[in-house]
Amino acid sequence: MTSAHQSKPDRHDRLRILSEDVAITMLACASTDEVLWHLARNVVAKMGFDDVVIYMLDTERQSLTQRAAFGNKNPSEYEILDPIVIPLGQGIVGRVALTGESELITDTSTHPEYIVDDEVRLSELAVPMSVGGEVIGVIDSEHPDRGFYTEQDQQILSAIASIGATKISQTLAVEALRVERSQLSDGIEERTADLVAANRQLAQANKLKDEFLASMSHELRTPLNTVLGMSEALTEGVFGLLTPEQAESVGLIHESGTHLLSLINDILDLHKIERGRVKLDLHLCSIHETCASAVRMIRKKAEDKGLKFDFRDDSAAAIAVLDSRRVKQALINLLNNAVKFTPEGGSIGLCISLTRENNNELINFEVWDSGIGIPKTEIKNLFVPFQQIDSGLSRAHEGTGLGLVITKRLVELHDRTIRLESDEGQGTRVTLKFPLINHA
Ligand SMILES: Nc1ncnc2c1ncn2[C@@H]1O[C@H](COP(=O)(O)OP(=O)(O)O)[C@@H](O)[C@H]1O
Ligand SMILES: [Mg+2]
Image (tube, rainbow, N blue to C red; front, side, top):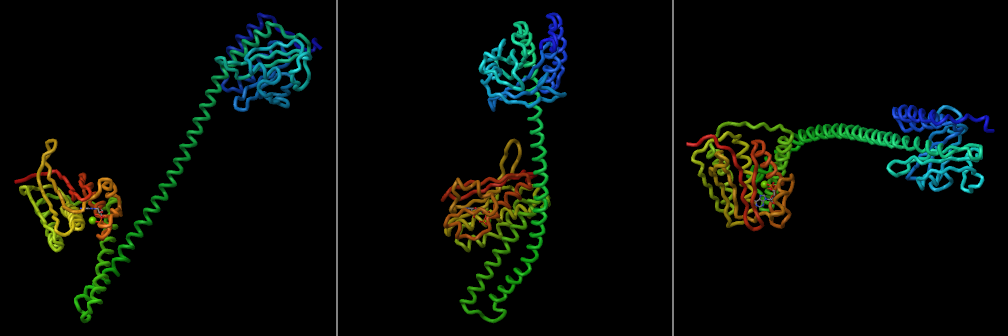
């Protein structure tokens, strides 16, 4: 039998193989598979062994799989004949993987744990591939002859295994990194595609919303104006005198219609602002004039409700660059809230004053009331569309819940901020500050 097998190179040749084939060629291998096959077919084969199988440890499955071979188990190129899986701890290979100690068996027939793979062979040399004390695989060589392997074989194979293991731990790390990177880039691609789809849906939804609002504006406002006009005519007795019950009902129709109209106008207004369609018409304007015109609109309403109205102008004829129509709209919103949320006998007011902050002269608009106030915890919700505080009293007041949102947006269009101070039962004060240009 022995003569049919190749003879072992001498010590000198083996050292040359070790340095040329293991150290140099193997270090140039790019993948774990390449290293394993190079070890089996080019390195161990040259040691004069008939056969070798290299196992890698699968820590998850606690088993060893055959990954490269030379000899009978390797009939062609990179093929392993009938690969088997060995549980960690079983057989000689399994035990070497578990203990990390190499084993030289001179007579397998006396070893009950010997696992027959393709055929029974009488000698076996199994060495661990370890990195930093951790076994990652086993190199296993068998020979038909009893006592084939020497201690020198064991030393040389151990050296090969140890260099191989170091190289494999590198290729494994690179491969894991590559998998991670490709998963990461897959994830990014997927997310980008999701975003593109979401954006498209959003654009479509926005287009539908625009179309809906445009038609709502026309389709609802036209009949609504008819309802308002007719109910006004009825109230004025154009079609004959109404009974008190009829007058009350028509009054309700008119009131509801007006509410609906203001809701539609607010929604359209907010939509226009949010879509960036509101352009400010900035010009130099008199602060007093802007406020006086808002006050004229609200004073009567306040007094009809039995509220004291205090308009104080300490602005000394200040002039600022504003869109006076929009600032007036904001003030009217705030003053309307003050009237609405202040019970009879209370007072509300608008105070204009000048302040200085960080060397800038500012003009303050303060709308205040002695009304029901707003619980501190609710203040942050006020600037969310359609939010109204659901307390019994405020619910008793009609409204759209859009006034403050629109007001805030109008102020923000001017690059300014709105400040609201309030507490339950303490009244409310809203302050807007604009930069001042000039005052006499
Ligand atoms: N001056 C105020 N006093 C008390 N509560 C207020 C005042 N202003 C606003 N609020 C509260 O904020 C909510 C939102 O106000 P707003 O956006 O103007 O909507 P609306 O006036 O249509 O209800 C009101 O419903 C009310 O609960
Ligand atoms: Mg309001």
